[in-house]
Length: 194
Image (cartoon, rainbow, N blue to C red):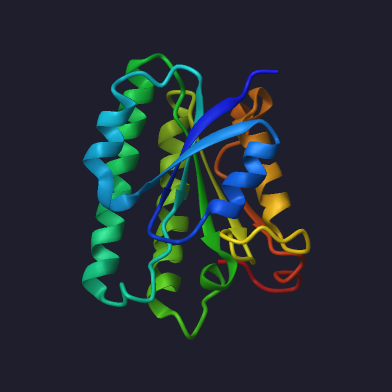
């Protein structure tokens, strides 16, 4: 079985545990930071053959606790999405994106207003981009998670998140678009979703 390939773009959040889980299920993801926007697009070099998808992990770090950092992250996300989708389309591949959001932030975490604002913006942006990407056979899906993606702990939700990413990257995953999936071990049950 050949390995699926892709790219994780993170805002500084540790994602090694998630990458390790994905590697265990035959999925090889390269990790880059949002600040490397130009490098990311150049590293694709127009050749994304064999690439399955791009995973975006946009959470702001505690050091990035300003409105300017939030505005900058949103601009980086839009720029990366637009340029990456163009590279995929130019190579004849349908662009597929999966966005990972902290579930607590997506549900309106009072202690982290900026990440909650970022999550709300990403959910809204994702609803629009999923409609636009559908026109070229692409997809945009969002997964809300409850655990630390940097630590490999069998009792947390990394394995289900990795499995969901693998399904969305697979051949049957191309039919899944515009979904907001809560992989929060039931923490969202009975709550209104954004």
